[in-house]
Image (cartoon, rainbow over all chains, first blue to last red; front, side, top):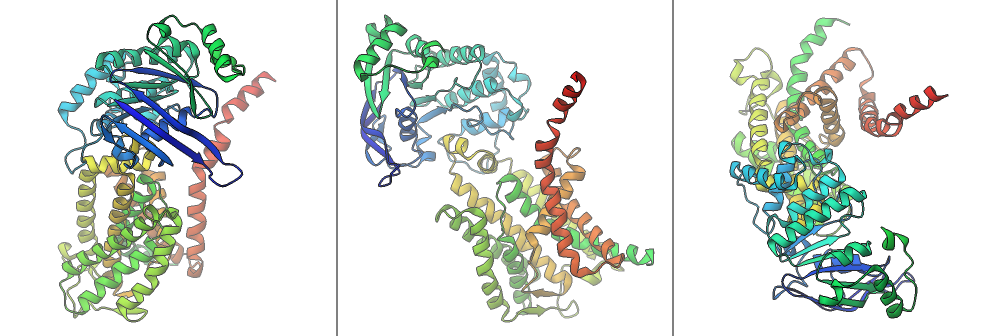
Length: 264
Length: 309
């Protein structure tokens, strides 16, 4: 379970560039919830993700994961509870290290890193099986440097790394935005498969309304650091892109000006 | 210009190159693995030398003295690491601050600008006179080679451990590392400590080899170390893929650097110009990957254009 309680985050406080990115923001995810997040540029989507991940401290409010108050924990300590996949495929993996080495790093998330060997034989076998499930033939390239992989392969690998240790919350920050449509669909399919298999509590930002509607059991829309739409259950199942646009206009009083979000 | 003179000078160049090679390994760790240009080394090399020589002059065993010199180097790395991580100072400036402060510390350790030590009165591990006409086990080239092999073996093991992998990941992608629960600040401090420990050890060997420690002995150490690293990569990069061999390449690069220095001296070029020459060579080598990316990746496209015209 994830609880964001009255979180406020202001960038460049006290300057002309002051920007209230999250404004008294609250959101609660129940165990097993798969929430999709949409919203325009600067609506606070990524700020919300970074606040949960602890990239920087928030100004006000509390973040609780599974009953544990993580508000004061630094990023690397919160990592114990979180699996993260980023928009830029370069961000989620270490390019100069091998595929198996990256997986081994992820396997030790939240654990003490001692002077024991960085990757054991037994792990290698385990990773081989897991990579097979991605169906990208990566199991034949276990020692290849991740820098040699394509964007889609890297995102699939990052997804595997994020879920290797079952996370309390899986954070997906537009993780298919940088991929071509075919690859994006494949990565999303893998996402769906892993989330369902492990019954992961998931928060997925997307700029694609269709994806936001098709996936998950709840959809929220952000604007100016607030949730302006919150659709779940049966209502979400029946939702269409047009409905969503109308709802957005009604909720915000303006048109949703992004062709990419509608068509993409 | 007698060619024999050059040949005679070569064993000395090998010995000096090997000793500096240990510093080069340290610089490889910060520059290539942690992706930090650590200028602390200009000070910590002298610290290693100063600590070693003062301890030996006050009657301590050579091995104990070298160990303490290594620890002193590590302490210097710790200071830079804390400047960088705890105080948020950019890495390059953190190194400059430590190096600057170490000048005073090194002076205080030695009590004056230089201290000499003789191979007659003290039981040195390496020395200028141990390069020729001594049994092989006493030969400086042999002794330092053994030290280098042991160090590479230890580092090879360490960078394969969980902690070592975390350190490599930190240098490669610190965002990803934190997302995977790695304390990147700890990794950086640890890397700087290991690196400067090696540089301190190199200084400890160097002061014995040349018979004195000097307040300026570390000046330009970062440039010499970088020269060694990039010469090693330029020559052995294509064939040395294994991590241990990459460290070895830095040592071989260091030896080659001192070969070149000896040749330059033999050619009768003004040695005052040596540092300028080193700086220019390192500058050009560092520019090569940038130029390659900027001017040579487009060349295939240009050719395509010509064919069309």
